[in-house]
Image 1 (tube, rainbow, N blue to C red):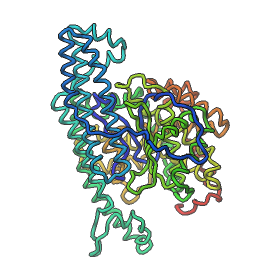
Image 2: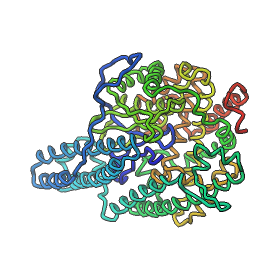
Image 3: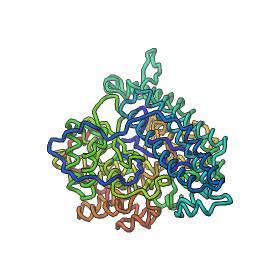
Image 4: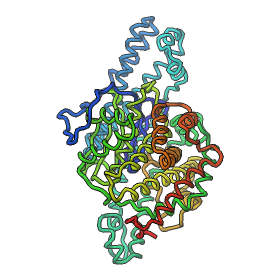
Amino acid sequence: MHKNGFRKTAACAVCIICIIALSGCSFFGIHIGKRPPEPSVINVPDDPQTPETPALPEYEHYDSSAFLADCEEMLRLYEGGKTQEAFSMYSKLEDELLKMDELQSVAYIKYSENVNDEYYSDEYDYMDETVVNASDAFFTVCHQMITGASSSDFIDFLDDEKYISEYQDYEPMDAEQLELFSKENDLIRQYYSQADTLMETSCTIGGKEYTFDDVLGDNAYELYNQDSNLYMEVYETCLKKYNALVGETFLELVDVRTKIAASYGYDSYSDYADEKVYKREYSVSDLEIMKEAVKGCGGDIQYFTSVFSDDSDFYYADSADLVSKVGSILKDISPLASESFDYFWNNQLFSIGEESERMDGGYTIYLSKSQMPYIVAKTDGSAQNAITLAHEFGHFTAFHTVPMPYPLLDSGSLDLEETHSQGLQILFTERADSLFKSDTDNIRSYNVMRLLSAVLDGCVLDDWQREVYANPGMTLDEINDRFKRIEIEYGSDDYTGLEYLWCDISHNFESPMYYVSYAVSALGALQIWAVSQKNFDQAVSAWESLIEQGPYAEDYFSVMKTAGLKTFDEPHATEDILEDAVSYLYLAYQDQSFSYFGTNY
């Protein structure tokens, strides 16, 4: 993978419309959106044909100079007493910001369709910086208008407490902050350039040169079968060399982000991210309750992660067939999913294909100006691809069902958004017998294992990142040692290269402090799964309750309780959720009919 699907986060002070995402792993991700225009209801045909005109808007290079000049003109008009003209300009600029954000999304979609396309890669980076600067200019002027001598006129025009408070509290970025955010983006781009060379990382052993491709590529088993000790030596040597390369970039990112946090008055970047980037309602002490329970089951989860292999041979169909078959199952699960799939298919709101140059995985992105979600994915027709599509369609359904109340302000709750998607993916596998046939039980167990793994990985990486950002002066060796220690605390064995594995997770470089939301949301999805084992309709009702409350609710705990689900801060809640899933996997493990067991234990 050259770039993962995470949209680069704009300066958090202006991360109003700029944060959109996609998971770097196969089927986990974050996404934002608002309700699209009402669709006409159709039925998916047995043999669907792609319309000639795709829904994706055309991309055009955007010059923001006129927008920046208009921001200054709006302030001049307002301070000159021409309030109605200023308000008309406000509406125009608001629309332009949505257009810029959409163009950035389109550029990323185009890049995702061909990761070798340097034009769209550069255009995405260009639009990323453009949106940051334009958003800051717009919010700075709005801040000046709402805190100036004639603020009452602007307040009356807005007539909305959320916009009023956002503009009043906005802190315009100074030159140093703009430079820091620009430096952060440069370092992220540098990391991805370095990540592109992963398989080319080389070492010389016994006078012969080896690369990572020899131990991770298609022919890796040849070297392992020839000399397993040599295989492990090549693996560890190349991984250590790659760690040193990207590790220097990571150290620079930690330094830059520490300075960004300090510029906003925070002692550490983790505190800044919790409050300014992700706007989490729960505290670090709340998370500790969850983490202690996860440590208690960590060894079991680590074990099942190795036992339940990712076997992509389970099911194959061509891409178009896979989409329609997944859709027919989703439509039978829930009326909300059914309506959303009609809209999705009728408007062809996806780019899904098998081309080798496509970005791996899948993601959902929101086209702000067109007001519609859009799914991008690469597929080879495997079972994992089907699960990915179901996952992404959970996001799609949420964005289609619930309006975005504040287009310029809302970024959504990652914890709720991921529960929407993980919840639908788990319901999907419970109803996918017609698709997976004899492999269905295997795939269900694998899906549960992946959710348990998300809980574990979310806790490990959150603990590690909090320590790193609390101690920004750590050396790379100290960072590696800290990661290894925390992995072992959560039940991992001490195996070759363990301390270096964090450097192959792109979230650590691009979206720090994000990963714990995978853990929080997976606990919600595992509850939906547990309910489905006793009463499938009740599980669907719980998922629909989460969807209908929307991705933008400000009280995560309240939303979960309304859906009849436990929250991770409740006594013994996390233990009970994990024990249900672990017990299920133990029973699955004992069933020797599971064809892919027996190779890793």
